[in-house]
Length: 295
Length: 303
Image 1 (cartoon, one colour):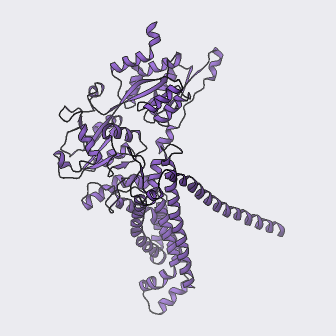
Image 2 (tube, helix red, strand yellow; image 1 turned 90 degrees about the vertical axis):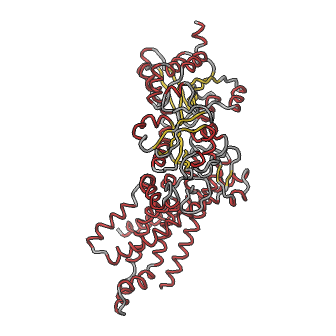
Image 3 (tube, chains in turn green, orange; image 1 turned 135 degrees about the vertical axis):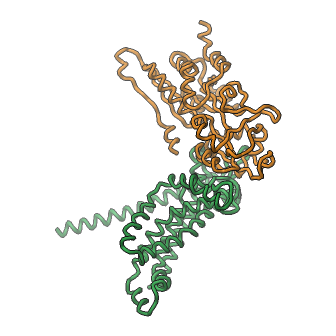
């Protein structure tokens, strides 16, 4: 019996080790593929045009342009807009769920929020076109609402379940003794939450925000449908935007293989990959720093 | 995206049971335009019902893909929503392939605005100016003091390219909102009082009644001082008075024989044209029919 248990332990350990290394290998494989194909674009496109150009128009009538800046700016514009909405709302909801919500409300709210994460992005995009965009147009007196604000609102909705669920877990993980000590000193529940529980849960909350950020960064179908996809450089939240993901999704389908345009889309993919890698590494660093501070 | 998957569905039917009759099944391969793939499928299905000894395979991939397949001898019929270009003709000559264009349907692009727009007609030149971004407010055309809000398809669409080459002959204005499909263009313009966009006529004729309460189909004139025509009236399309029409082509290599010829005659004949109409496109005119016969029927004419 003992040997069997030992063997099972060993097997499971090896299995999960292989799975872990495999995901690392796949990650590097994807990046290598993006880089390998993306680099070929620079045979015909000046790196300075690609990285500094503000106009992305590879399907131009006579002179194609491959400036990635407007795509990066568009992506960051709607993602940061989404975070401005989703982060305060998400952390607030998580704190309410973890600390205040009566059991009867919690039993209803929690599954409802988790269900939200399951709505297909194409459905969110459709709601964006038919409901949210006309509403934005009416409220702000615009002709139409197919703009960055629309994208931000929809992405905020899509990032919320992630932020709420992970933050709630982080807040719950704060030892009860922390709160008890705070209450013993005469602090109100609000002060306890703000000055004790939330700071103690900060590393987990940061991870939640970064996960939500990553979700919004990579979202494709919703922004492709609801933000207008214009090529013009956006001047703010009321202008249509074309994100990196939307550009790849729209253009790759009909681009002839082994053309400059084809390779340029891989280069865009590589840049997007690097951005999300930086976001992940940064969040990991931040989370670790705050964790040490707490200990 | 769903449409895209659909385009790759290959329709192959093997009538193995027919071997007993000592008749061999004749295969016809059709490849090309995504615009035409649905109508080509419908035509193929109807034809195969009538002629069980013929097996027709239809695939999409785009006009360019279809023409490339014809030039390398990998398809019998290349569907194309645009004429072959000089480069492709040059390639054909060098490979001693003799492409013949058979026009089997007409596709018109309707120009739509919000129903509240006071404009009823536009000239082709003004339309080009609007979509190139040279006219930026409706006031410049005698309309309300509103900025023009442009809607079009995405650059992977043949319609995007057709409209650009036919009407603009230059780049679209950068402010063009590139929508994911025809339905979304209509959806957006229905709520945008300053919107203007183009949609395939097939889509409109189906939903005409429902749409006219929120959107308006503009009449278009070829010249700024000539009469404008509506694309909703068939005779305007068949007579060529409506200026934004594109023929739908079937390219073949040289003189077709047997079942291939029979199938092509079926597509341009009464029954085939009925299917074309049901698929949302317009039937060809009599002169186009005669032109087709001249290309197809040199043998039969001799008989």
